[in-house]
Image 1: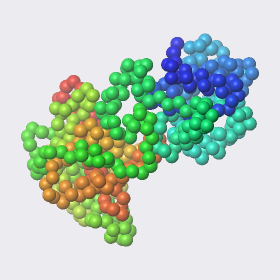
Image 2 (image 1 turned 180 degrees about the vertical axis):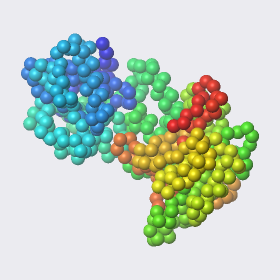
Image 3 (image 1 turned 90 degrees about the horizontal axis):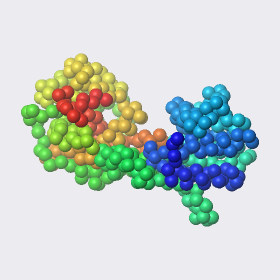
Image 4 (image 1 turned 120 degrees about the vertical axis):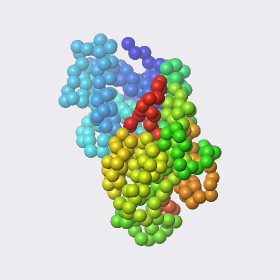
Length: 461
């Protein structure tokens, strides 16, 4: 039998009191990632199904998606009912409804396309991962489910940015608390959870070392600090961390290992309109960033090598077909790179295919930019800088050096729902080819030699 921790019990008692006494309160519950909010929800559902087994009524829980989130919640509730001795008593209906006597727990998807109108919540309305649920969907289709019954509502989640449904409910609850003293918002960050779980403490300490304290995911998922809209991608501290002291080089140093990230210039047809192009300080370029790997810094906390940028190679205004022989010569004959991550989006597919044929798939990793993949790339870049694993060569007075830092300073980030982000340089200000090439280089740095032992391994992800 799983026992709830004190912070989980605090929430459960408040919600159960509101349900039993028909108070109709709305609660917001922020618990650090993997801190037990789903277990809290399942145990609370068992309790309420038991209390209403004869009287009956519907409890409704929605999640951002049916698969896997809603399905996982349904499975967890079945397990907990079995734990409490109800194995022969509960039944399922239509694949998403679980009943115990006359009481029913209904699981619904809060996806924009889900048809949920017509359901009524008599006992409880739960919103899982509320930060990822559309405010419009909730206000139009889910909130009215409890209007006729003055139902108690609970929003669970981890914070993201200041525009989410969860943050909206949280701020309203805090304002109501100031007025009447009734606690409606419950917040337990990673330190609150770790006080009761030493294994969790160890896990978060590793994440803190890997991501860095200022990383958006660490701030939101573990510290429960919301992000604030569009802002600079790098902080001044991160820019300082990115600056290295090593010298730029034009040739490899044996027996070091070298990798590359390649951002490809778009074709003329794909460029912005003439007016926008004229506002840019230079044309879009193909940028190759060469990195030297240092495996001596690997540890159990951060099992990835440091990557020192040692060279930039750029081609501006040259068709891709004319870049092929130079690209191949730089990567194969000059640097002998062990891994290349290349932008394979749109017109880049042809160059990626050429390099795969010339150098082989184990060496060349085509990268297709999508909303999700670019978001992951951005988070990994921030983690590498925060942990000191990415360093730029020292000032050398070159145009490459100036352009690199111009893009780093001008880089911006936008945070979206579902814990995703975008990073870019405003097209009206300049290009982001050096920025993208750096991000692809960090992706390439997920390489370690086949002969490595212990925590080192080849990570072809």
